[in-house]
Image 1 (cartoon, one colour):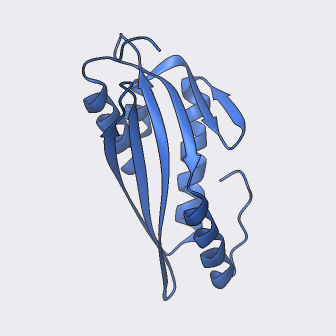
Image 2 (cartoon, rainbow, N blue to C red):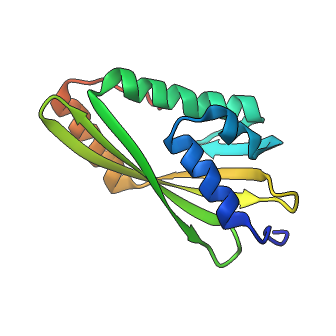
Length: 143
């Protein structure tokens, strides 16, 4: 891997904050034109396609749940990449759940994000499935 950008944690913090606040234009501006997003066995290439993925997920969440709030935590990896833990607090009726997943983000020498790797946490994913079933919600495997 090439050397990480010296401001990679700040750049990633701006990106994760933009996602948390659904500021799609700001998030897009931090992505390299041909950025790669690897999620659940799929490769999504390019700023617009990646933002469409995030926007679709947020849209599904806001149309499915009564309340959803987003936040994120960042940690610098030894190789210079940044691990973002996304924390979604969701409510449907009287049911509440906290869901976490991780994304490892690479920032190029120009200060743009060039690769995002999504990792589901098996335990969190299983708990989410149980929560959705309890609420009577069917989720496609894409989100």
